[in-house]
Length: 138
Image (cartoon, rainbow, N blue to C red):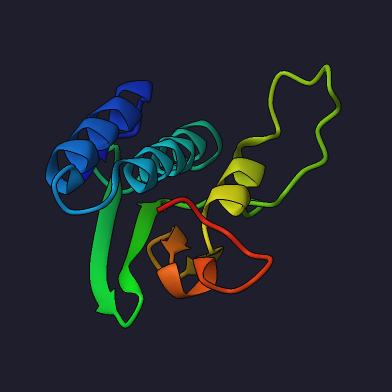
């Protein structure tokens, strides 16, 4: 899906994801997916350039595993001078927590760059949730 490189892009992406996956994944996992997608699109709009046409590309993929469905979210933008990094945020800071939310809710996340820009992805893997000491919602 393609959304505008604007704050409304996150809302459009959240609503589409929620409507498409509501009957496919457990509600607690869906809430985490929606929260992470909102952070990723919001970060793309706030910190990165748009793709040609003033847009951000949003995608999700489900794949079956022995422990359930693995879900990957991917947000592609035009990139920025400095890539996404976890930042230390003081209790009084008004921002700087977005990627901590992504890291806390997903099994893993990362960044890939190519000639067009960058993609930030987050994966929700039920196999990771099944390991002692590790948990993801779902």
